[in-house]
Amino acid sequence: MIRWRRGTVTELGRSWRGAREVTVQVEPRGDEPEGTARALAYPALVGEPQVGDGVLLNTTALAMGLGTGGYAVVIANTSRLPEDRSGPGHLVKMRYSPLQATVLGVDEQDSPHHAEIAATSDVGGMPVVVADLHSAVPAIVAGILADRPNARIAYIYGDGGALPAWFSRSIADLGDRLAGTITVGQAVGGDYEAVTTHSALIAARVVLDADIAIVAQGPGNLGTGTPWGFSGVAAGEAVNAAYAVGGRPVGALRVSDADPRGRHVGVSHHATTAFFKVAQVPLDLPLPADLPGELAAAVDADLAGRPDRATLVQVPVDGLDDALRALPVRLSTMGRSLDEDYSYFFVNAAAGRHAAALLGDRAASER
Image 1 (tube, helix red, strand yellow):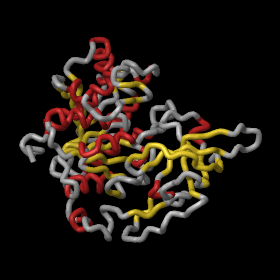
Image 2: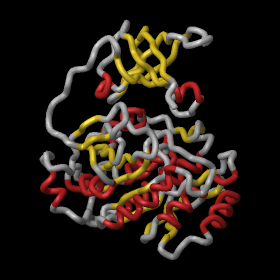
Image 3: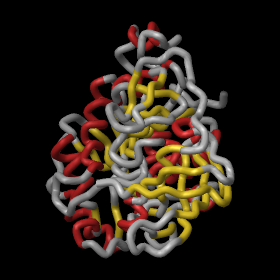
Image 4: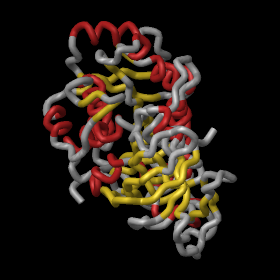
């Protein structure tokens, strides 16, 4: 289940919010050749690594050749223990795993925001854009900011992919384009922690003063090639949650004409499963006004059987390309760049633009 290895840190690499790359000389086991590995340490969990430190590594993802990151992960520093951290907080994330960690939940009794969150049951029609892949988030942000450059955007980070939000370079690179990130469920490492998507959405509104929320899983989603065995199916549950707390759900459709897997060409079957079968409430489905003809025909066919509660919205596209290319984030989905899977990112930007239009006079007006 876990490939354990010992090693020694030989070099410190890049760092970003909550994460540090290191190069590790790995002790071989059995007849393995000696070698080095690129590893990732989360200082909040294992302390800040230094050259010469002995470390325990989980090399499972590296050995499997998983596409997200290609890292070994530092489990523990065997040379130095990090300091004990004290303070409020009773939420246990990654419960009963070897790295279970206690955090302060924005919605728990020790939080200074507890009373306000407890007293709030409705987010007042806040647009909530839901996507099934983490790679959609920067494009959605681009679409929002193209028309509402001062909009406050909260990212609700679900636990269908990487549990530590620190893993995401996109979150780090988006910087102050996000008002904040809230990690929910077993996910950890956001600006705030919350128990559920529902309480995270309320916190987005009353704590982050967000105009718009985006809900998506972290990077490294899990799929099995079956209709229901995909972690992004939780996008449908997020639509229901947004509606339950008085939000305005917007579905960011997963559309591609570049994915080599037929089930993801046109509208991915994961999107139709999440938004048409799991979601049981009204939602908007934005599409750019000028998809290429062959792709537009495939999308029309895939959406022909949608339920009446799913409303298609045509979105003007002027300026969206510039907004996507101006992002400080390297856009990539399943290893494909912006130009290699342009329609995927373009549709997500259109979803962001539609969410911005829903603000009306409620506004993300000039703050």
